[in-house]
Amino acid sequence: MIFCLHKEAGVKLKNMSIYQKVKTYLKRCLTVDQWIFLKQTKVKMCAPFVRSNLTRLAELYWTDKTGSHWYTPHYMNHLRQFRNKKVKLLEIGVGGYSNPMEGGNSLRMWKKYFPFGKIYAIDIYDKSALQEKRIKIYQGSQVDSEFLKKITDEIGTLDIIIDDGSHLNEHIIESFKILFPMLKDGGVYVIEDIQTSYWEDFGGDSKNLNNPTTAMNFVKSLTDCLNHQEIPDENYQESYFDKKIVSIHFYHNLVFIHKGNNIEESNMVKNHKRIY
Image 1 (tube, helix red, strand yellow):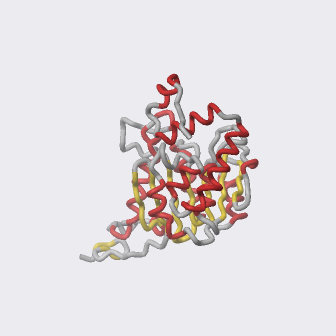
Image 2: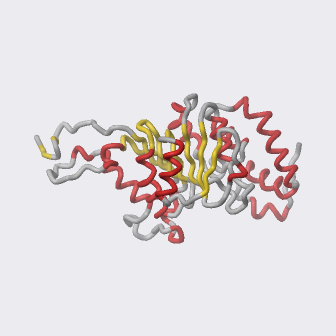
Image 3: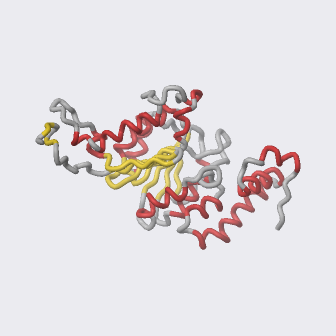
């Protein structure tokens, strides 16, 4: 099949990948039913052959975790260990904005990648129409602590949490504070699109790169938790994050925070007092 892009569409699409151009062109030309049929047919035919390759799955399910972003190789590096386990994954943000029938692409990708996993999501809009076997979607705010506690009480502790929600800096920070304790030891918390730390309309700051209210600087501050055993201050009070963050990995617009027991002792400091 040969896809020809209209000349007038070319100007808007020139900065997109070939994958994005084809997707955008087809959505303009096909009816809703034709578009849905095409997506379903493509997935049924191809997904079984690429189920262990997250980048190929992202392309099949038309999620922007590849193409627009380059997240999938990092996801494979950090989440490969969970692939054939009965994981519980929660993703903040379903996609499609207010359209109840749009979004859910990455949820279906995760469902295929984790064949024994249960996939959960939350969104400020009602996306319940997108639910299917092993995918459950809740409606609510990512900073509503009562709502988040209610759903985590229902589904239990989580193995993977992905924040692909509002991308507002205050929301990123508050969601992490609420949800990280609900992650299992050995689990991974992921923050996507953290470039909004530099965008003022999202509560970011491009002038003062040390602004403590941005999500990036909040996450940077968590790196001190990794080394809290080295702080020679006898009045230092260890936080929950000090005790439970074992590694942090930064990539372009993407952060992985691994949870466990941070018990590696210092060879120079004991109980926050220098011994050498």
